[in-house]
Picture 1 (cartoon, rainbow, N blue to C red):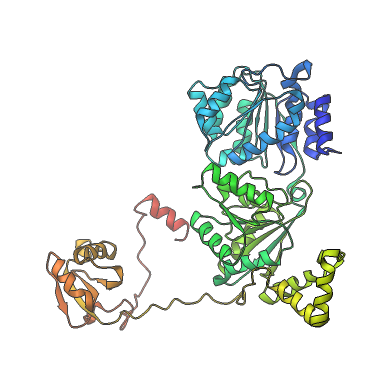
Picture 2: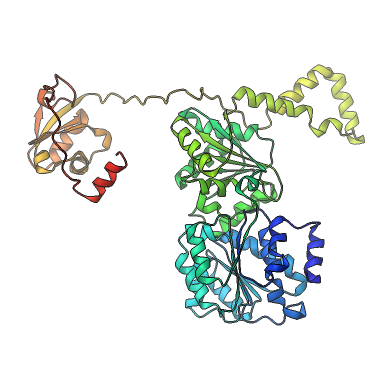
Length: 554
C-alpha cells in the first residue's frame, strides 16, 4: 500500500481493515476486474478507493495536473454519490486529488465548468453523467478505472441503458470494479458484457451481514399502526431512527403525526429538492432531528452514522428492499434494530419477507403505554445528573430548595419534570382487535328521481354521478344511492338539492315517492330456485387481462 494511503488511514483511526477491504487488496487480485458482493456499511467505499489507487496514481504516488478524469465512480443516488466523494476526498487528499461530482438536482452548468477545469476522479449518478456525455462536457478516453457502486440498486432504478452507454464510452483497457449487495442474474450479465475475466469476490453471507441487526416484528391492531410507531420510538434507547413508508402521502401523514406528538422529524421523499434533502440529512447527522421518515427511493444509499433503529411502518414489496432498508443501521460493526410493524392483514406478508430474506425475527406486540412509561422511569435512575458534583454556583440554591421543600417534595418534582420531558406514549388496542367498522351516516331527508337509460344504454354510477353534480352545481354529499336498472337509473337526492338538480338537468327526470320495489338493493327478497345439474362450461377468457386475473384468483 502506498505511503499516502497508509498515512490517510492512520489519520482516520483505521487500526485494521474490514473484511471487504482485505479481500479486494489480495495480491492475486491486483489489477484485475472485480465483481464484489458486499453489503452496505461494510467499508466498501474505502475498499474500492484503495483498490484502484495504484492505477490512478501510477508510479509517482501522487496525482499530476488534473485534466480528463482517470477514475470514475457511478452511484445510484445523489446522497450516495456525495458520500463517496467525501470518503475519497480524505483517502486521496495527501496525493493531491481533485474530485468533481456530476449528480442530479444540482446546477449542471457549475458541474460542466468544474469538468472543464479538470479532475482526477469523477463521482456521478448515471442520468446526469449521460447528460454531460451527450453535451460533450466530459471526456472518458483517459479513464484507468471505473467503479459501479450499488449496481443492483442502479438496475432496480432503471439505469441499465445509461450504464451501458457510459461503459461503452470508456476505454476497453480500463479496470472495472462492480460492487453490489446481491448478485442477481442481471448483474452477472452486465459484468459478463463489460468486464474482462473478472474475479468474483463474496464477502460474508447474508446471515453474517445482518448479524449486527436485531430483527423484530411488532404486532399491532389495524387502527394503531401510527400509534405503534410512536411507542416504538419512545421505547428505544438509541439516538436516531428512520421510519419507512411506501408512498409520499404516507410519509407526509406519519411525519405530521410524529411532529404533533413532539418528535423532531425530517422527511425524505421524491419531491424534495437536493438542498432540502441535504438539509434533512445534515439535521439527522448533527442531532437537530431525531427521526427521519422516508420512502424507499429517497433513502437508497444514504448513510447516517449512529442510526440505531429502522422501523418499517409499511412493509416493503420484496425481501431485497427489506434488506436495503434494514442496512441503514448496524453499519461498520455497530448494533442496530429493525422492526416490522405488522397489523393482522400484513402478518403473512411479514413471514414471507423474513423467510425469503433468510432472517430470524422475534415476534412481539408493540410496546404498550404502560411499558413505555415504565422504561422511561427506569432511565431516570441511570441519568448522569445524579453523579455530577454540585458546583459553587448551585450550592446556595440547592440548600435553599432542600430547606424549603424537603427531600420527598424535591424527588416528586424531579420525577414529574422527567415524565414531562418528552412525548407521551400512545394507548394501544390489543394486537388482535378487529378494525373498527365504518358506520355510514344516515343520508337524511331525500327524494328519489328516475332518469331514462340504464345498463342497456351503458349507464354506470361512475358516469352518472359527475353528470348530476355538474348539472345541479352539487356536492357529492347531495347524492345518495344510485341504482342502475336495465332501462332506467334511480338516484337518491338530498331534499335541499333536488330543486337545483331539476333546474339544471337537461333531459327527462321524474320524481318518485319512494324507491320502487323492483329497484331494491341486490340480495333483498327471496332468491330464485337453485340450478340443477352441472354448471355449463365456461368459455375461454375474453382477453389476456381476464386470463391473468383468473390465474391470480381474482
